[in-house]
Length: 123
Image (spheres, rainbow, N blue to C red):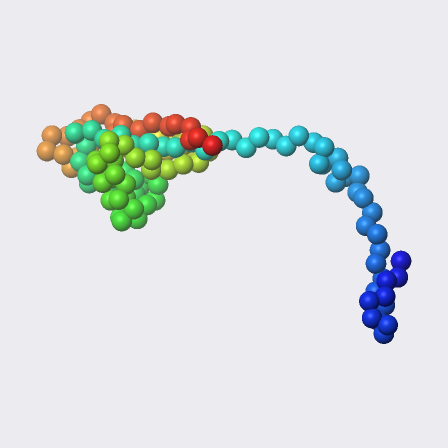
């Protein structure tokens, strides 16, 4: 098919062929995406600020400013979402928080784990 746009120019327009592969891909049901999960750190009266900051820096790789900001939120509200993503990674991060070891910054060493849990995020 030749289409004339300008008398001096000719443009050849070819009809696009439909691909059977593309039609089949459109008909296939797509896998559902997994909802995000949150790692939530809980406040207590035993673990120190320094300990929580160190945990957040080591487990998540946060810089000092981010770790302090999240620690203040944990203290002020009783809990804070410190990370979100895939369920398997969230469970791993939770377990790393719980297994971090004793809080040696405290006057009396705190040997029980920092409270952390995983919850599904809405949406």
